Image (cartoon, rainbow, N blue to C red):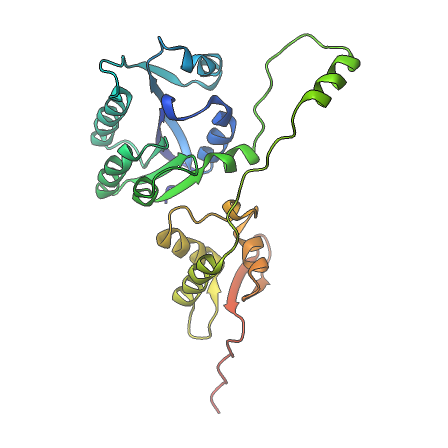
Length: 265
């Protein structure tokens, strides 16, 4: 996985993403490295992309115009793929961030990984599995929105009575649907701990997290309603956690019921 000092290329499919995710998206990407290239693709003559125009300058995202030459064919995908390959061959980037819910980018993600470059994918929960599994890590849009609030457009202050009336009329927001920590997730967690454990059954939590990412690119504690992997592990009920050291603390885990080996003699 890329580190925070690495150079990234951010490519956004404007037809398959909303400007509401921008704050959360850039905050997430900042934990992986610096996105020196930020591009968004689409036909900017169409009204469906108007929402993006307000935030592009503020976020330093370069719009790339791609006309829809033929009805039913997505020219945006082709432009993104061509640019991605051009950027890949420069050898300047440690990772690519592909923002789309379109399965057409599955082969692109696989090709980038074949070059030894990390791929981070971002999309809706309806994103087809081929694209998700082709990425090293995949993050869902609702997770990004849950961790960040997009600033509201500047406007004149309104009387309290008007604001209150709007609050009454507004329908309650629906919380994003997160999968439960089901048997499949628990099995993946058990496999990761077992594979990462040393002779006495202990496993470093960081190694467990890395193994989980290899098992499933979209295994993320936030997808199950937990802020950190530590919280998810504690809630699983099948793992014991031990903390030691200071700044930072070392977190190790062990499957419950696994007896420690008795010392010789």
